Image 1 (cartoon, rainbow, N blue to C red):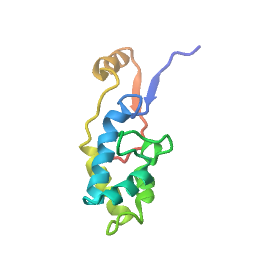
Image 2: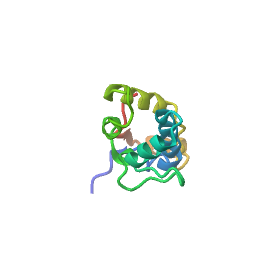
Image 3: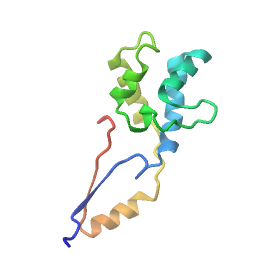
Image 4: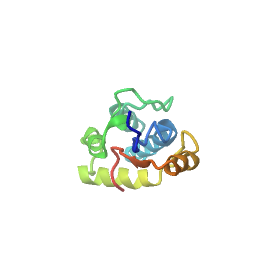
Length: 129
């Protein structure tokens, strides 16, 4: 068997704890987009597959496996005054500031892989920003 030359990791759920990162981000986005309207917040949360009471995601939530464009598409029509491009920009700005909770201490793990001569890369479906 050939030696493994490199590894490509997905980010969310593999390197970083998905829920620790994206549950708070989703709640903040819902609150911001709802503008204080509880019924509007419920409609947005339902469209995103997010339970406002528990902070949990439905397995089919576009936030789990969707791109920013797909999430924006799910929100269109629910958030007046926000174009598709504006929604993506808002999500990307908020995502850049979202705290990332490591699944394991990544510096030592990735350092050991690098020291072993492995090439390490990431292949998330996030926006480049």
